[in-house]
Image (cartoon, rainbow over all chains, first blue to last red; front, side, top):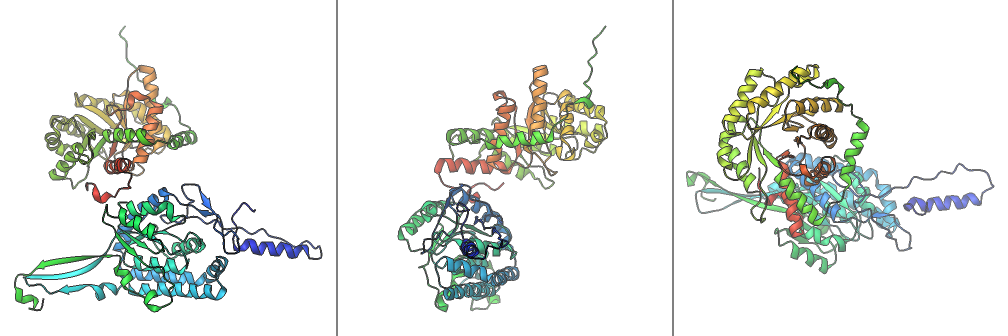
Length: 323
Length: 303
């Protein structure tokens, strides 16, 4: 069993068998727990990494968190294909529908609180911190669910021009967004980086925290059971160092949302992004303590493209002189 | 006593072991093709494409645009081959013929009341003659699947032979519409009938029925071609059509053709892909090989 995935439950198992040895020799009906294999999430499926490689991150006590997929460039490629395929449907979904689905994520997350708390604690946080983080993650999805049918009205504009035109600017999703998720806050960081991207109609390819990857895959299971169409959210685990250039250079990735403390990697992405003029948004890794950090509609706008339309009008007076 | 040419008994066509065919076909997908070989394969596949538009909404402009694409796959990539042919409805043949003149790209026309083939023989002959007279180099006919499934093999045979005659110099591709035949045994039998009746090519599908081309069904047809070649020394071409939309799959098909029929079939005289979206994926993979960067369809022509 030692060669298989170790996670929270292996600890329990160990204690259990220990207490059995101290027992009175009565045969207790011992059960070998089925351990979870952490896989990646691509196109609504949970495949293993194409590369067949794994790594074993540990917590501060030196315990192995699990055999985690060490994704390769081909996993990035497959994820982008899946995200592109899902884009038309997702960006065209009604705001109401997107809102429902984000809210559904919050509901599903809430019901699996215990599992997330267990994982976050195993990754090295205290019980209290873990509870707080899960609650904040649920809040995040509820908050951005609310923005789905509002950000367009709030941020779009009718612009004054001196000509016989009716001129207005509206927001459109950028397309496929690469998200380099925060290294810490393995759950809240994902929620905070994914929710604003998808509520605006983008589809995403997420690279989860390298040292704390457990929640990313469990969160993918939440997405999977929340009516998020396959391919809208794709989640990879692995090393930024290996994958950074593919996020930067891929012609079919329209924006990168970067949440790590690594100037070197940021610069690599920025340089490569020039080829297809992708937008690179750099977010200083946050502790997500203040409301300004966690509840911020501008994060939706960060990943939107402005479309300005000049609509000719026959009689300039008809538009009212103000426009 | 004059020698009477007798037909083989098509009910005695070999039976196909389904499990074995599926397994064999899947093995062709496990080859690793990289670097120069991959580039060679991608270009070869590009050169084997019959760029196809067969829709009720086809217009002369759509056909012209496709003919241009057949000759200029992606001009920023130097020395790319052209497509093998453009495949259109008979009414569009004369337009296509004019557009591809001098480029070496052939014009193929579907006929015989494509795609259902539910029309009297006289109509099918007229349909074919019209296409040939308009300048079609190749005719893609459909077999009468209803007759075939009814066991009326002689009718199917005679019809193909008649259309072959109507084709004159144009090469004849016979579409079996394997998705409607149901079993590999029937695919094999239909292949044998088409080959004996004079098909220059056998083709899997119209593209209007799902499933269209698959590797196992293509393998059954390739084996029919192979057996015929060993018996008579005559080559017959193969054209899988429909459902082949990515470069990787196209390379798997090439591997299969090469390993089943051999290098003589590895050109567009004897092997074709009936596809339209395949071209852009091949181009994107070629650009990926050239630049090392994954490509986006935003930078390739919209067909």
